[in-house]
Amino acid sequence: MRDVINISLPKDLNRIVENMVREEKYSTKSEFFRDLLRMKIEGRIIHELAESRKELSMGRGRLLRSLRALR
Image (cartoon, rainbow, N blue to C red; front, side, top):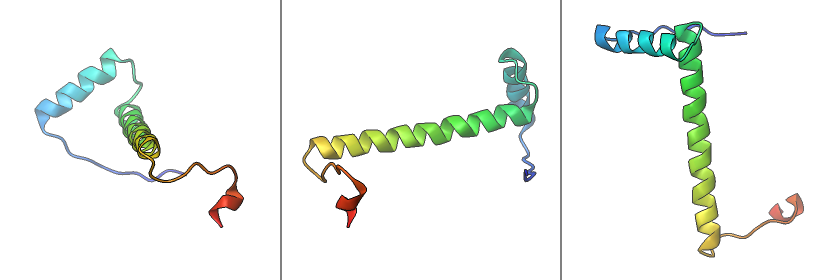
């Protein structure tokens, strides 16, 4: 099931989106925006993982060997 959202864009930004949809061979603007959101979400997850690794390498936290270690 999907929810429908509407966005309004300035004309110049809409032209850019239309060009990107055509150049990158998306079938619709909706497909373009869904892909854009997925990339944003993946980027955030990658950033959070990198931050966690950095904290672990600095000695903060500990590596859990099992879920029982959470108790």
